[in-house]
Amino acid sequence: LNAIGGYADLLESGATGDLSEGQARYVERIKVGAGHLAQLIDEILAFTRVEARREQLLFREADLGRVARDAIAVVEPQAVSAGLELALDAPDGGPVVTTDPDKVRQVLVNLLSNAIKYTEEGSVTLSVGSLGPGGAELAVTDTGIGIEPEHLEKIFEPFWQAESPNTRRAGGTGLGLSVNKRLVTLLGGAIEVESEPGKGSTF
Ligand code: ADP
Image (cartoon, rainbow, N blue to C red; front, side, top):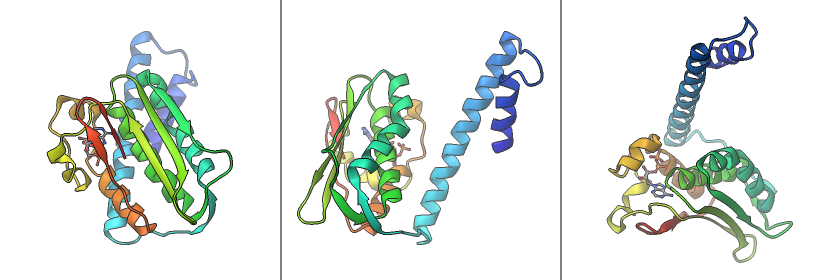
């Protein structure tokens, strides 16, 4: 995949001469396809790692406001191209907790990108707050399609996806939330969801 993406980049940059309009269009499709496959492989690897209990955690002091800003930066291009407002509601400096910040960021990026995928219009907000001594609560809220009450239990199961045209259009594997749940549990936390169909969801 690195070779496919890399050579497509080279072709696009004109390294072997100018591309015709049709060639440029096809090169773009190769890049999008390679990107989708890379994401699919990342999700399957993340799932396999947590299933095999091989996830390595590295606990240290971390400023969750900073972790949240990093996560927002990763998904910002996705939000811009979907025409959604992306907001961060976090206090300056803190809360500082002992955790694995890379895993927290991984979970946040996944929740944010779900929120963007399942929202047609409106906004996606990440808020960060303290929760008791040494703890924190992170919430990702969207104004999207929401989740039916009878599905709320199932969404954390591996490979489960709502039967809707929207899910199919959004792609995905149905693994993201099950990985998130496992990671959050390993970090000593819990993941919960509240949702109203047609109004939006908060994880
Ligand atoms: P994927 O997004 O790859 O399908 P996930 O495990 O991340 O898999 O999510 C499982 C299912 O839960 C999704 O297919 C979708 O039906 C539903 N879902 C997840 N996040 C949201 C959200 N923010 N709004 C509405 N539905 C959601």
